Structure formats: C-alpha cells, structure tokens
Image (cartoon, rainbow, N blue to C red; front, side):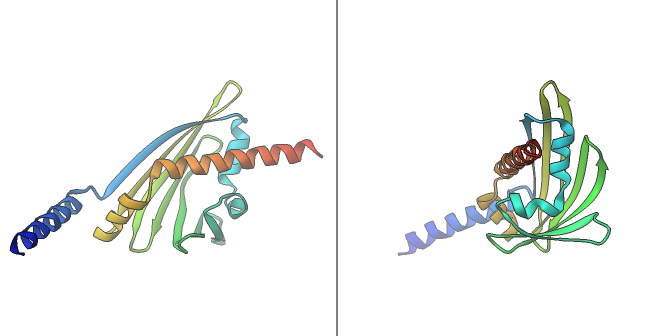
Length: 169
C-alpha cells in the first residue's frame, strides 16, 4: 500500500512540475493561400459584424460604438472573447489585442500580400495563459494552428458565397 502511495505521489509531483515548467505564452504562425483578390479577403476578415453568420464557433458579437472593439461569445462554451483593433492598414495588416477575463490575453496579427491569382495570408496568434488552470486547459484543449486554419477555411467559404452572390446580380 505504501508503495502505491509513493508511486502516486511521484506521478502527481511530476505532473505539477511539468505544468509549472510549461511556458505561459504560446505563439503560432500559419501561411494560407486564398484564391481571391487581396481586397476581397481583407473585406471578409475585417467585417466583424457578419462573423456570427459564417463562423461556426461564434454565437454573437457585441460591437463597441466606435467599432474598434467588440466581444465575441463562443457557441460551445459561452466564453466571451474581447478584441480590440491595435492596427488596421488596409488591405495588408490587421493587429488585434485579444483576451478573456482570467483566462488569457494576446495578439492576433493578419498580414496579407497580393499573389498572382490570389492572396497570401500570414496569421500569427500569440496568447499568454493567465494562471495554471488556463495554461493547462489551453495546452490540452486549444490548438492555435487548428483555430487559424478553421477560421481561414470558413473565411474562404464566405468569400466564395459573396462572390457567387455578386455574380447573380
């Protein structure tokens, strides 16, 4: 019995040390090609009001009066993510401050450049977990690269939908 207790204590101690040594900040950069003009891609990425219509994870958006800040409510968890524009240079660069009370704070950078026949988007998300539990939860349940890629996949579908609607006018 005491050998089992010692084994459990060692495993628990290793788990605690592992969590304490995990970096609080993580950063991911993903490059994605869009088969659309840079202005069209920019328009979709900066049309914050419409995102609940085409982003599967966003249930609602509450815009600030000056349209430079907003809160997204996630469908799955109800978590409220605060976003604020730090830099907006059409159609090439968008920098957002992000955060959720007590969970994380960070930056999201979207940079677009013209490419023959389309646009290249380079997206960087940096997030700092605020505390041990958010750090563990982000590491176990949130994949920054998957988030960026899913956002781009849904943005591509919205670009196609808008282009299709314009073609039917």
